[in-house]
Image 1 (tube, one colour):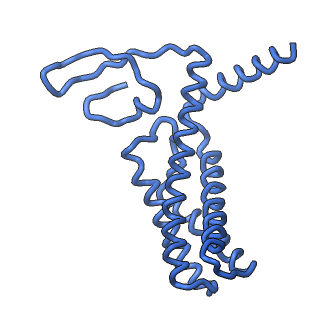
Image 2 (cartoon, rainbow, N blue to C red):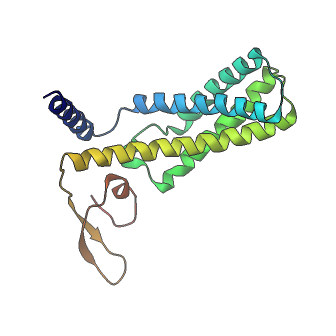
Length: 193
């Protein structure tokens, strides 16, 4: 009986999740911020330990503060937290790269202004690692969210929609079965949903 209640609760959660037109941008923003800060702190601590560099608690706090400010500026500049399910495409990766690069640049500037006691080698390697890890984790998070959304659609038995595709070559019109939400969001010439 209790197992059945969990199953019904999970179905309700999936149903609510799939009825949302967009996942609330502030929820995505919060997760993005947590991911970005975690990457910075864990990445920098791992790098400093690997390089055998001594650091103080004050340096770590400066790094955390600089990462928070850099992340906020980057996320508000590129607005990567809007429409994750419907508008996450390969073309949208430039925004995530922009976030990672801008965050790293602001992080470097703030650490220099705050006079953190890192060597130039630590700055260069640390900021490169922070940039790459931030980008990878943000992309991984988006893939995870899209897969959860598609799984919820399949669990609920949502039927696929027919999509009319206007061809640009020898075929002028054809009907195809709609691909998962991620594939439909690719903004190609001639695809209308």
